[in-house]
Image 1 (cartoon, rainbow over the protein chains, first blue to last red):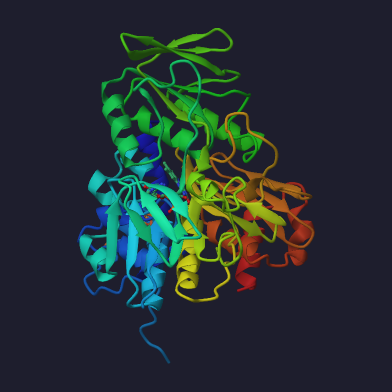
Image 2 (image 1 turned 45 degrees about the vertical axis):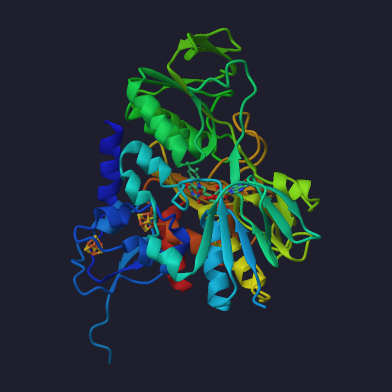
Length: 85
Length: 433
Ligand SMILES: Cc1cc2nc3c(=O)[nH]c(=O)nc-3n(C[C@H](O)[C@H](O)[C@H](O)COP(=O)(O)OP(=O)(O)OC[C@H]3O[C@@H](n4cnc5c(N)ncnc54)[C@H](O)[C@@H]3O)c2cc1C
Ligand code: SF4
Ligand code: SF4
C-alpha cells in the first residue's frame, strides 16, 4: 500500500455522514488551508475555523469534503435544530 | 498620544497579538516586523505542501485586505538590537523604531549541525517556506535522500521526500523513533509503516560527516563506518527559540524568553509570545517551552490584550497535537513520556516539553490492527494519552484530560487487563457532559 492509499483510507475513515452545519473547533486548527482548497464551491472554511464560527452559508452543499479532508479533526457536522420547541 | 505598538514576528503569535491589540485600541499604530519575505503563512501546512496535498498559494490564510483592515504597518527586515531603557529597536538598515509596547514573537529556528560538510547547499532544514521550496526543488532532481533527526518534523520530511525521491534513508541514533514521547509499540507501528512505504531505516546510526563531490552532497558517513550515497541531506534535530535579541538586551532568558502569566518579560513594556516564550506551567511547577501553533496563537492573543492595557492571565491549555506519523493520524495530549531522545537536541516542532513530564502514572493500553490507545492514568484523573489511527476518541480525551475530569468511577475498570478502554471512555465522557 502506498502512502497515498494510506492517506486516502485515513480520509475515508473520517468521512462524515450526518447532515448539519460544518462547525469548527478553533483550538485544533493549524490554518493549513486543506479544507478551503477542497471545498467544491470555494467557501473559505479555514476562515471559519480561525474565527471558530460554523459555516452558515446557505449555499454550503453539506458534502462533507472539508470535514473528511481536514487532517486534524477540527471540523464536524453539528445538527441544526430546525424545529425549536 | 496614542500608544505605539511594535511586534517582531509575523507568525501566528504576532498576528494574533495584532488582532487583539486592534480589538482593544482602534487608534494606536501597530508596526509588524518580519525577516521572512513570505510574511504570514501556515507553518504546519508546509508538511502538506511537501506531500503535494495543497498548493503553495493555499498556505496563506490572509488576503491583503485583512491586513489593511487592521491598519498594520508591515516592515520587511531583521531586528538586530534593542534598547529597553530607550524604548528603541534597530533594524538591519540601522533605522531605529520607537515603541511604547513591544512584542517579541520571533519563533524558533532549526538547530544546525556542526559536522564536516553540513554547510553544503544540499544540506537542508524545514523552518520556513523558502526551505520547503528549496527542499522540493532539490528532491525533484534527487535520486536518494538522507533524513536525520526526530520528532514530527523528521517524519514530515521523510514523507514529503518519499513522494519525490526514489530512495529515502532515515537515520536513527538509537533503537527506535521518538523514544521520549512514544512507547515501544507506537514507535514500532510508525517504523513498520515507514519500512512498508519503502523508507530505509538505519537504527544505531549516527551521522559522522557529509561527503561532497564537486561542491555537491555525494554521501553521508555514519559513525559505524557506513557510507550512504545521496544527493541531499535533511536535518531535523530540534529547534531553538530565537531569543538572541532579548538576551543581548538583558531580558531574562533561560531556554526561551521568560515571561509571567500575563506574557510580560522582565521588562514591563516588553512581551514575548509563541515558540520563543518560556511560560510558567502550574502543572509542571516550572516554565516550559511549547512549539505548537495553538499555544502560539493563545500567547499572542493574551499578550496583545495586555499590551493594550488589559490584565488577562494566560491559562495554558493541556498541550495537544493531532498529527500524522507515517500516515497514521495520531493525537498526543498531556504528559506521555520522559527522558531524552538521542535524535533530538531539546524540543522539535509541533512539540511540548510537558509531554515529557510524566511523573507517577499507570499505563492502560488497547491495541487493534491499526488503532492504538495508550492512557496514562493518574490517581484521580488521566494525565495524558496517545491515540493512533481511529480518532473518534480524540475529542473526548481532549476534554477528559484538558479539563482534568475526575475519572474515579471508571479508574479501576480502566486498569483491568484487556479492558475495552475505548468504549469505557466514550460512555464515561458522554455521561459527564
Ligand atoms: C514543518 C513544521 C511542522 C509543524 N507542525 C506542527 C504541528 O503539527 N502542530 C503544531 O501545533 N505546530 C506545528 N508546527 C509549529 C508551529 O508552526 C509553530 O508553533 C508556530 O508557527 C509558532 O508561531 P510563532 O508566531 O511563535 O513563530 P513563527 O511562526 O516561527 O514566526 C516567527 C516570526 O518571527 C520573524 N522573526 C524572527 N526573528 C526576527 C528578527 N530578528 N527580525 C525580524 N523578524 C524576525 C520570522 O520571520 C517570523 O515571521 C510546525 C512547524 C513547522 C515548521
Ligand atoms: S483543514 Fe483543518 S486544520 Fe487545516 S485549515 Fe482547515 S480546519 Fe484548519
Ligand atoms: S461541506 Fe462541502 S460545500 Fe460545505 S463548506 Fe464543506 S466542503 Fe464546502
